[in-house]
Length: 504
Image 1 (cartoon, rainbow, N blue to C red):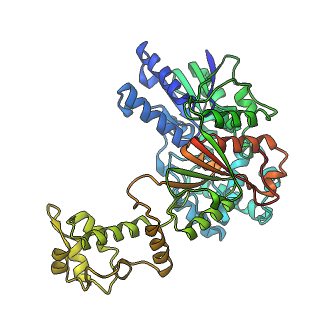
Image 2 (cartoon, rainbow, N blue to C red; image 1 turned 135 degrees about the horizontal axis):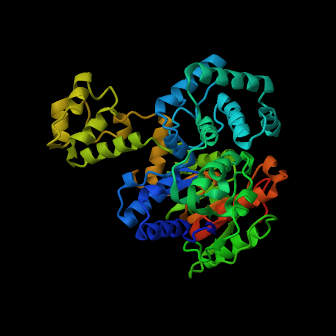
């Protein structure tokens, strides 16, 4: 039995899939015979956590709630030592005279491909994408818009990578999927759930169809073809649309208010290739507001997600907000101010207000004080206080011989550059709360925000020449559709400031 579940934004796709898991368990299906696999770590972790909470299960019982390549890793019986690590890519970088930044922190829970960052990442991305698409490296190179890359350099990276893996006996993430398909072995499953199926690359579909499907009794493909935004990775939406004939469409969004749902639905109907859907929004009206410039959007209060089509545009927005004194989280790089610095400032100010601090807080503070106010011995003393006690400013001054006064401004005590000091002062003047919880303002590209949501979303229609002139305009419509559908209450659309802008 095969079923495809189409879940428009906010229609409770994950909830429906967990209900299926619950029904299976209630009917006597063993947890270890249920596989819940997905394209991304985020989706896999969300499914595992929600299922564990709702079904009162131990996560250790949910052995097959994984990303696809993590599933392959487990079935193949691999160890992390057998997989290329950040250290391996550093060695490759030295051999090639290139840098590989994005793979320095790659783990078993991450995806297949490199994100083009430094010099080597772009070449490695071409190689990996060619492999998951099932095309030659040369063909993928010719599809690449970045003219700063050179084919001879690409060939060298390919050859050095191949030889290094042969010499060390290690594999990469793509090898993992290839080996799984070649081996053709998979545990017998009562239920196979493939979440985010619209985003599977050709190699992953081979994994599902050739190996996993023959070993599963009941299969559910879940996703939303209208949110298929990885065509540049070789994803073909038709693979998801044609997965099977039995189709279910979830028709009620619990996220999108009426006005935003209608705007999104009208836009996505422009797609040439899609599954027709009739669905509705919440009972709230919501609002859509148009702006000429991102600086016209009042983001002083409330939760905000600011979305841009490209990293270049997102970085420009981040720079503008920083000039205005806003504190924000930039997806991919973190807080606009070092959390450690901000924490140090707050701790120092708390001390000066007469508050008592824990030894753990003071240990953190010890690393942030400038050398002029504390000796090496004093810093050591501060880092080794009794964990059972709390301390105030007078205790610290006596114990550590601080050469400071309660009236001293924080930037004279905490290690911080002049530029950061000015920015932090502006942030505090804006009345922004310190970094103790979730960020109030997030800045992200649309692609990185997929699966996220916020009360208020500001969507910039600025794009790039490559995007606007792309032959695959369906992909652009889907991308901005994803952006439109992140908003729970209000959507603020910022008109393009250049010739290359998306037309709603």
